[in-house]
Length: 233
Ligand SMILES: Cc1cc2nc3c(=O)[nH]c(=O)nc-3n(C[C@H](O)[C@H](O)[C@H](O)COP(=O)(O)O)c2cc1C
Image (cartoon, rainbow, N blue to C red):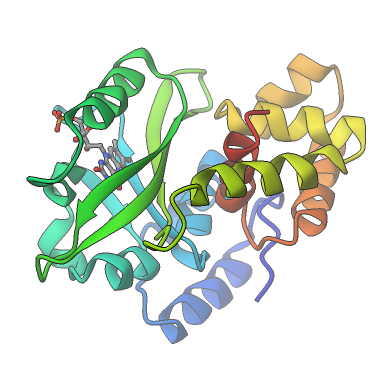
């Protein structure tokens, strides 16, 4: 199902999204908050990519929202991990330098993406191409940290490098305006803030957002943000 996160969803649409989300095995919470964060919360629930959100004002950033792809990847049920900091994924073989890089990026509110050894619930390891980035609220305050996880597999040590190259290529193919909008999205800005920065109407920003999502061949804003950060846009 293709979701247009540029829209402010009407209640009927929200109802349909909730049904679609349930059909995919995940429970869509906070439907009333659908106009928040330009659909980021819903895009997490509806994305095939593993995604999590932590509220930025909570001490130690416990997970607030996790999607079914994250549960599938890690083997944890939602109820076991909501309320816990995501460090439960790290363990003995996790590189402390990579972990410190994540910690520092979060403290400095910078996007970060790296290859880190993580552990599933059953104790097996996987190479996680993790991305974490700040998302801002309507008043310009830091609202969330969005995290995205990709299993890089064990065969190719350069898997993340290849993903970055592919992402850079696809982003290079975007028209300049869409690239600008994507860059602002990847900084965690909302349509209104992007409109103000680029001196465009909010409607025009929404149109560019919808077009670039189509062009990147993804379903949600959160996935587009990951591609932008992979591409180091
Ligand atoms: C939204 C979000 C998602 C995160 N996802 C992961 C992840 O997938 N894997 C991981 O090892 N750490 C992840 N982290 C980072 C850890 O929560 C933690 O910040 C990291 O282990 C470094 O801090 P520590 O040394 O205090 O544990 C995430 C953090 C946030 C806020």
